[in-house]
Amino acid sequence: MRETHLAKKASPNPGNAFLLGLACGAAAGAALGLLFAPKPGTELRENLTESTERLRRRASETLDDAVDALGALVDKGREAFMNNEEAVKRATHSAAHVAKARARSAGA
Image (tube, rainbow, N blue to C red; front, side):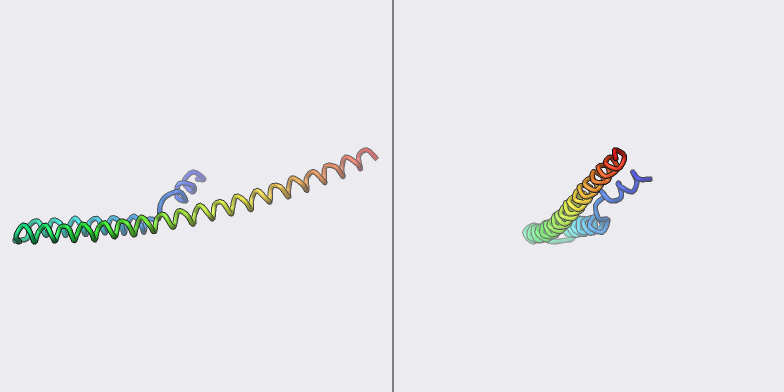
């Protein structure tokens, strides 16, 4: 059960994957539509170039969003680690004091 929970947390946002798939599918559909449309070669190449550029921009934006999201996750993980590290230090310090107090009371 824990392994499944961790796998879910590690997986990328399905919304981003869907958007990327949608953009790729739209670009592929547009390219096929252009290829089968009765247009002169020059116009077809221009349309393909424009479609490719739009796809590149969308892919770049999606990648930028993913990088930003990953950076936020790393920051969040780092913060959680630091908080837990501090809690462990406090607990260790407390346990040491309790152990010393018990040792003193047992020796007295």
